[in-house]
Image 1 (cartoon, rainbow, N blue to C red):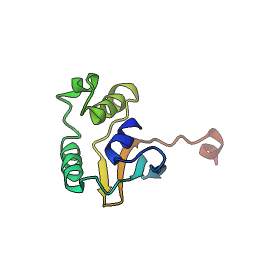
Image 2 (image 1 turned 90 degrees about the vertical axis):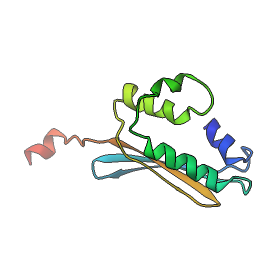
Image 3 (image 1 turned 120 degrees about the horizontal axis):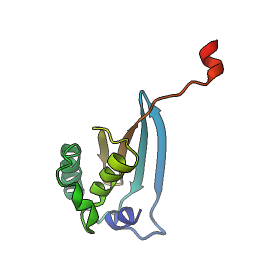
Length: 119
C-alpha cells in the first residue's frame, strides 16, 4: 500500500483505493484500483507496467524481492509462488490519466460440499 501512495503522487488524504475480488472462471481476480495525481507521467507508468506484464513469468531475478526500491512486483510474485502457491501467468492492468487498475489472478478450485455432491 505504501507503493500505491508513492506512485500515485497523492497524499493519503486524497488517495482513493478500491480492492475488488471476483471469481472469473477458474481464477480469483484481485483488482487494486487507485486514483492518480495529475503529476503522474502516464507514459512512464504504462511503459513500466508493460515491462512487468511482459516479464511476469520470468522468475530468474526473483531474488530482487529481498531489496528495497523497484522490487514491489518481485515481492508479490515471490509471495504468490512460494508462500501462497498460487501464481498464474495472468497479469493485467489498465491506466488512464485519472486511475490505474492492476489485476492479479489466483487459481481457484471450488469445493463442493458433501450434500451437493450426493444430490
